[in-house]
Length: 203
Image (cartoon, rainbow, N blue to C red; front, side, top):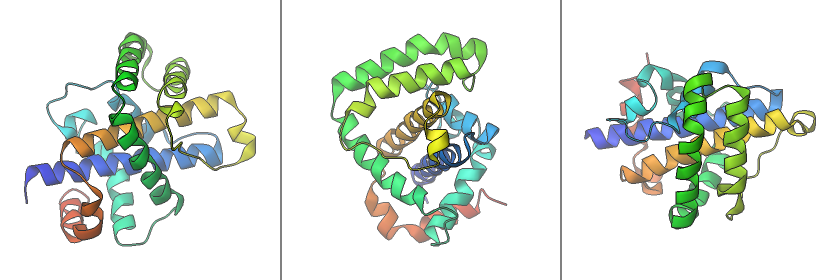
């Protein structure tokens, strides 16, 4: 099995991990610290040497790898994550075809990066800035990703900002997956290979 295939699996795991945190935040009002920070950090790691480096090492993607394994074996903890993943994949295709939007997102991330380096990517001010960037750029494209959750939390600006920041991270993971040669054919015909790849990384 090629390293590029294994890297695609890691990128898909990152997508799953980001969207699991979207669902958790939408339902409970807060994400699960380390799992969320791993994927949010990734939006600032554009020139990393490997997929593992984008996410700070394979161990930090364990939640996503376990969730991806459950999805591939049709035992998802949350049916909403696969549906969101399909929506994000459609949105990423549109995003990748819009050079002006790509440039706007890149410029925004460069602007926010010093703040993230100083405060940490999960700081409320950074999440607010990332959420605003997503709202002003990717969220303007169609089809939009619709997130369902508890109305009480979805009415809070801080929760909405974190969800948008996580969606930005989800798009980042999907772009990475496509750049590595990923396609929906993998999901249809390479389940066994993906499960083998996950088994080498998940205890």
